[in-house]
Image (tube, rainbow over all chains, first blue to last red; front, side, top):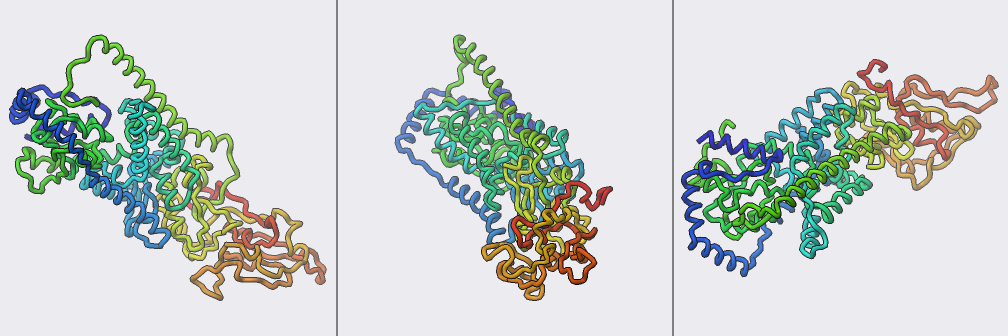
Amino acid sequence: MSNRLIARKLRDLALMFGAAPKKPTPEDMTEDARDMLAFKKSPEQRKWRKAAIASERAEAAVSHKWRWIRWATIFGFNGLFVASYWLDLQLFEGALTASRVLGFHLADLNSSLQLMLAHKHVVVNLVIGVTTVWLIYAVIGGRNFCSWVCPYHFLAELAEMVHLKLAAKKLVRDHELDRRLRVVMFFVFAVLAFVSGYPLFEAISPVGILSRALTYGTVISLIWVALLLLAEIVWSRRLWCRYICPVGLGYGLAGVAAPVRIMYDADKCLHEGKCRQVCLVPHVLDMTKLGFARDVETPVGADCTRCAMCIDVCPTGALTFDILGLARSGVEDTPEDVGS
Amino acid sequence: MKDGEFDAPAPPAKAASRVDEERRRMLRSAAVGGAVACAALLGLLDHRVARAAPRLRPPGALDEEDFLAACIKCGQCVQVCPVDAIRLGDLNEGLANGVPHIVARHQACDFSCDATQCVLACPTGALSHLIDRKEQTRMGVARLAAPDACLARKGAGFKGATRGADFKGRLRYAEIDRWKPQPVADHPYDLELCDLCVRQCPIENAIALAPMSDDPKDHRRTPVVKDACVGCGVCEMVCPVEPAAIRIEVRITGRDPGGPSA
């Protein structure tokens, strides 16, 4: 089944680079998926689903388990950076652009790339740092840097809550952008760094700005972060993370074959779309629409930040954390990522 | 994001507005992308056009343009400095946002760390790894900027805490504690002739007091900065007059230890 696997990974990459998700034809689906779809489309099943959704909504049970765990992790990581300096803990020294963790170099891909393009030198420490970071994220998930570490993500989540409240009152409207913009920005900033001779993106990257503001008190830069958050509240939901931030793209690439991912089980799904409404990158959850799943169980793709908001919001447990290779019965493509 | 069960093709009346929305989306995307790129380019414009007074960079810094290119803005140099001399730039410094500098008058680099710890901490070599002794650094050079204010040139002494009791700066007073920098405010002086810039200079043979005339009864002396001066800024920090009579002239080129002019 490795052809299916390669096709899926290519689809995941295309999605991350901004392609629109496509509805599969019946030939794209596995036999199980076709059977399941036919079953789900029967009038009795539709009726049953409607009733199930109604009763689920009446219960209105909301869990924020993963969000609290995740926020604690964001605070933990950034707190370690701050404490390493102020309490002389010396565990995480530096900022999220580059650091030493217990003496090992770590470096962000995007920052390092732009720096080397601007400086026109290969900096060995950064190559080591980026490789280490990539190896770590290639295992633990990739874009989980975004939702589990990045301090801007946390602020953007708060801004998103305000945006959604205002949008519900029709005071603001979400203006969607083209997702390919992020890829364009990745290259624009790389070219700008090379041509200008300075890593220009670094001065306006809210990731580095917040990381430094927390540890070193460079607070004037927070004006820029506040402007971004304001734009996200009144104009475009999750503007920076969704459409601009090249840092997220770097980590997304690292996580293409990550064994830690979110698994979608179409069998349990009621297709009411709650997960796509909370998701930062709803295109990765396109298969949760009825008739869009190519398989009964599908891992969510590389652009997914593993923030688990979909797991929190899913009333039926159709979305779960999954670690490739750890026992799970009935997963058709178990030996997949080996070697990819 | 519509409900999942709904995926019928849009009615023809709405098809036109969908194309319209698509066009608006492209325009919005281009505008946002352009705005963000412009925000980044503002830093460049500021650097090229409004060129502010150069900052004193930490020991071992490459020539200014290379330094700005090579710094990854992580602040590891800040963390290791025993006297907290190094600070990071903020957004008001444009593209140098997050780049380290030293404000010598507030807290000079006095090489308390002995072996240029900031250089060792720098992951990118923006603080060049080619130096390992304080004498090799070329941050700037001390200049007697206000000779008329200099106490030594007036033949005057100095008594009390230089810079006053509230001054937060620290220095290594090796005779008290070789490893722990002491607050300057805790160390009052009683000098017949002010020689603080020479007395506290951490570099051997970088500055000396020279007589101002051949008359042996003339007690006036003038500070003479020599080639060994690295521009660390200790003289500027300890100078008791306000503003400092001796100040650092920042080097922006010729400071790269690996460079042609090193």
